[in-house]
Amino acid sequence: MYRWGEHVGELELELEAPTEPALFRDAFAAFCELAGGDGETDGEQRTIELEGGDRGGLLADWLDELVYLADAEQFVPERLVELRLDDGRLRAVVRGHRGAPSCLVKAVTRHRLAFEPAPGGWWARVVLDV
Amino acid sequence: MSRAQRVGEVVWEVPASAREDMRVPARVFADEVLFEAIERDGSLAQLENVATLPGVVGAALAMPDAHQGYGFPVGGVAAMELPDGVVSPGGVGYDINCGVRLLVLPLRASELADRKEALVHEISRAVPAGAGKEARQRAPAELDAVLRDGPRAWAGGDDLERTESGGCLPGADPAAVSERAKARGAGQLGTMGSGNHFVELQRVARIDDPDAAQAYGLAEDQVTVLIHSGSRGLGHQVCTDYVKRMEDAMRRYGIALPDRQLACAPASSPEGEAYLAAMAAAANFAWANRQAIADAVRRAIARVLGEEAARGTRQVYDVAHNVAKVERYGGRDLLVHRKGATRAFPAGSADVPAPYRHVGQPVFIPGSMGTASWVLAGEPGSRTQAFGSTCHGAGRTLSRTGARKRIGGGELRRQLEARGITVRSPSNTGLAEEAPFAYKDVDRVVEVVHRAGLARPVARLEPLGAVKG
Image (cartoon, rainbow over all chains, first blue to last red; front, side, top):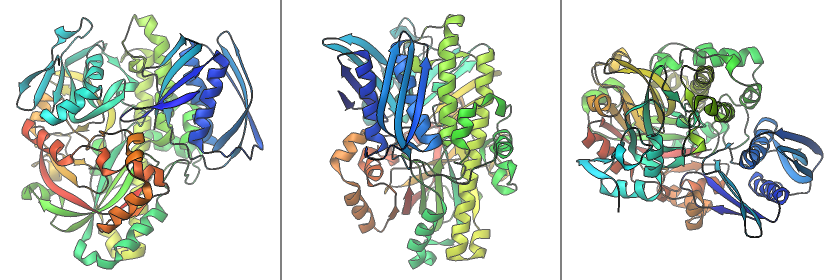
């Protein structure tokens, strides 16, 4: 589950999920909402592999990759085919298409970055620069 | 109860003793209304965090347009002792050298008359706007030339002379910019981007300082174009890359901070030097971006108003809002971080272009869409109180979500057009997020910097049309 919090200048994303991979999946869903994909065209695939840092840093890096693909390649993500989290590593396969992402996110900040155990699983917060 | 004390007519201060980790006071330029907003939205707490950075001198400063940012508040200024004080990429911001450029056309608004709408439309066609909108892809060598030389890579003459730092920061090194950053920027030169970026057609509604206005070439009812954009995805990627690199480096330097976004390293360290070289390159890219946009605006003017009007369109100045620069204060070289703040050097400064040196550096303060913008001139108080700085805009007071809840883009467009302001925007959502009520009162912000002696009003500009990103 994700929700958008109040931040005067930027966008604050809060996430809650029963497991860590589920939280990363929810972050993907939140980004897709901003990127404006309709889930119907997923002719291209990207594999994302990340390593290192703490879970909060890895979450920020995960969203950073999606920002990069949207900005550099105009890749609109549609579907998360695979996501694996092992130790400090993430591997994900994303399907989508090249188009005109309506995404306003320009960067993923480390400001107030949080990734913590919570009742029922995990809770995280990340502030997106828009 | 607030920890801040009023220490001047429009100056508030949290003493360094308020927190164990603060090295200097946190000082805010504001009246009661603006200070209350700055305290309420968390900007003051962020400024206190800035006051903990190693090497910070004097005070961490916030301008009256300050609002909640990430790490630094937007509207923040901090100067670091060199060589070992830190440089913080978050203290410059993601949009490195986001800034504004003012052009003045050789005609009055009354002479523009019914060609206004056509001109706004032509500008919207000439300048790609909105997320993901691209321009011609630049070859690697061409992009490297822009990173190294800024707009000098193709432009010259008055535009460069009337640009802060001549449009080129020294020490720029394309090799310090990652391939990912270059991939993001290669197709974005000459594009506006999204968010609060714009190109606005305006008229000079009022002159407050006739001498400075004359030096800047501004007369009542004259038509101007204000361009607001930055370093696009390239600058964002540079900041992203170096925040992560400095997070890792901080452990080696024994630096602990209250906010990860303040990640920093000594300016003289390998990480600090590499960031400064990459930041300078991104700043040069941003100046080149605004130059390319100005070129496109001149082409639009030629198509609608004729070649003579385009040739007679002069650049008043171009100022950076997000940058770190080495400047000299009190006999010391300091690294001044401005994040959402404008350099505002007073009359007599060698860094001010010769035609303006007797009146001070021009400063442009965009208001919210549909309200006024200001041309100011730097005053001596900027150097004695604020490391040569002043405000940069109206400053947000309402979140984007909050703005969207209060008005739809279509309705806002109708309201603005009913007031005679032509609007072009690729996104109704983006338009609503920039609604005038989401920002502070720009006149109030300008009054504070005037009362504080940081800058003085020269001219008030009112919008005729807006092209939004």
